[in-house]
Amino acid sequence: MTNLITEVTELAKEYQVALINLMKIGTVFSGEAIFNEVFFECPCNQKEAKMYAIMLILGPAAAMFFIALLINKMSFRMAYGYCKRSEELQFECQTCCYYFVVIIIKALVGPAAWIFGTLLDGRYYPCIRLEQPCNRTSEEFKEYRGHSQFLAIVMLCVTVAVIYCVFMCRACCCGYSYNYRRLMEIYQEAEETAFEDKLNETAKQKAERNVNSFLNEHPTKRDWEMIARAPPLNCTLSEAANEPLSHLDNLIKQKYEARR
Image 1: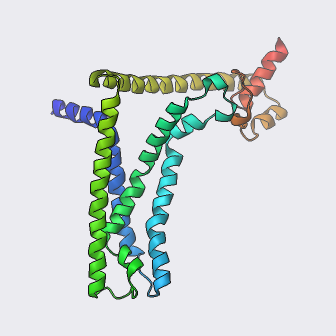
Image 2: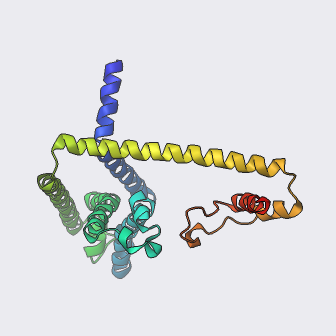
Image 3: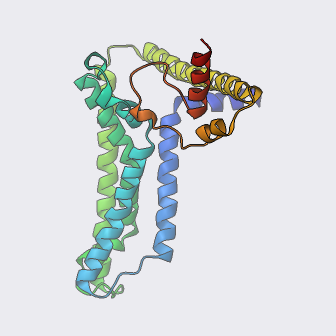
């Protein structure tokens, strides 16, 4: 049983990205099914029905796309400090283009799943095309519903083919062997984890030291008011590496400098 759990854990780590994408797709399909049952009702007016269906297809897809961009860690990692970064530390154009494409592809998983689900459902597309959208029993409605589901299957096949070609081209153009590439990925994950752990540990130690120093020196009313202000805008700080991390940290540094 222990060996089985270990194997499952290793497989989950190895195919983590694929599992996350499957979870996204499953969540989108579930949300789309609930949305159809609760909210979708095609208007009888043709112009309103067309606009209504297009908005319900593209609106949630666009929202999911921008939310995915917003929560993508790599996009923020590349954007932070870009305008104030020295020229020699700027990302190379090739690197920026590569990660930009990767970020866009990851952000398109949810929207593509939503559009595929709406086409497979078969009620949105007839709502766009029919002159009498309310008539769901007509042969024309069934015909357009069949067209919609056909487009969904074509979209699925094309997407799978494109993903396969991209991954195969990436693998063929890679300058490393499979095992060495895996070593690099594992090391990068371990390094990031170790860095985050060390940051948490260092921040906690520094915060405890500052709080103890503040409370042990009988703070005045002005001191309490100083640390109660809104946090500083860290993005506007200068390039100095020893900038204060908070108002409390700044106050402790000022008192330390005053004693020297």
